[in-house]
Image (cartoon, rainbow, N blue to C red; front, side, top):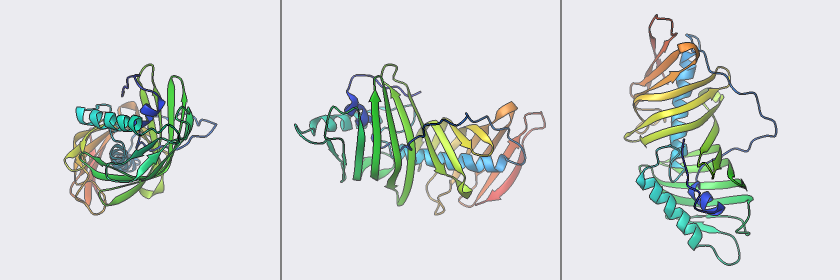
Length: 287
């Protein structure tokens, strides 16, 4: 789980998490999802959901200057620290906190610089993200701070990079005493079903291939699966926004599992294992 040190105030924390996208939550919590029992009838759908999740998690990482991954490297730490410094340096005695993007636009915080809740507004905020290029954001982010927990709700934030625009929704909480971070994001997957991803640990880049160390995707009909990559997933080079190569592995309940291997832009191989000793069963599919 990602960690933060408590050596800065609320606005500095916001600077470190600028770019994460979140959805607001309701007053009533739904029952927790159950682990999916992977079978011959749902393995293909869950494999495609895992594909959608990997793409969405990578977009979230691109929209976040230090990435959504747990493994924060020296480059991303330097970027996040630079943003925190800019927040501090650009505070004016009166008025809102304003952060100017390094390639244009701005993000503006509340007029009250000591506010423990409010909204941050992104206006064509542009920053260069290593491995992704220039990324531009538009939208509002609500935050609240109730010591020691900082909560962020980014709702329908528009993120543009690499010639595409995505609408991201994510919720994030940071415990400043323990340094623990948790997040989740909901989005429309292939076929329009509402998928939820949470707490992905990702390394690599879309062009060289992303490695999913861990992550969870919840399907509304089947429950959740925990996914990893057995080989890096290359997300660039296909006009249909499908992976070029790599393999994603999903774990379900009762020892069941599935995998999907990308064979160029237009086809894939999906497999499932019922965990009963019969071994994997594989089929081919096209986008």
